[in-house]
Amino acid sequence: MKTNDEFERYQKAQKKVKELKGFYRHLLVFVIVMIGLIYINLKYTPEVLWFIWPMIGSIVPLVFHGAKISNSFPFFNKDWEEKKIKQFMEEEKTHNNKFE
Image 1: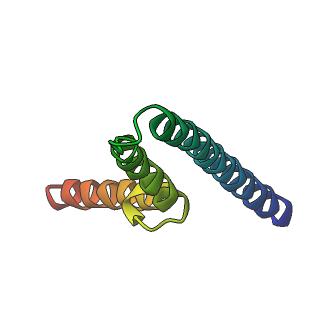
Image 2 (image 1 turned 180 degrees about the vertical axis):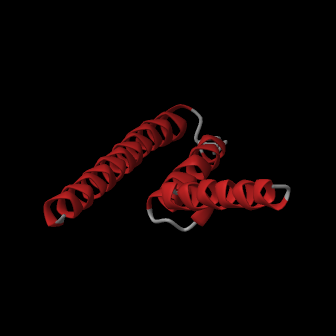
C-alpha cells in the first residue's frame, strides 16, 4: 500500500510542478511582451501612454492563473471537483434508496 500512496503523491507533486512551470512561462511571456510594448510606446508615441491598457488586460488572466496555482479559489482545484462528484453520487444513492 505504501508504494501506491507514494506513487499517488509523486503524481500529484509532478502535476503541481507542471502547473507551476506553466505559470512561470505565462509570467515570463507577460514580462517580455510588456517590456516590448513599453519600449514601442515610449519610443514612438511618448505623449500617450497606451501600453497601460494591454497591461491591465494581460494582468487579469495572469492573476487568475496564479490564484488557480495557489489554490486561492477552492472551486478551481480537482479536489473540490472530486468531493462534489462524490457528494452528488451519495445524494443520488440516498435518493434512490428512499423509494425502495
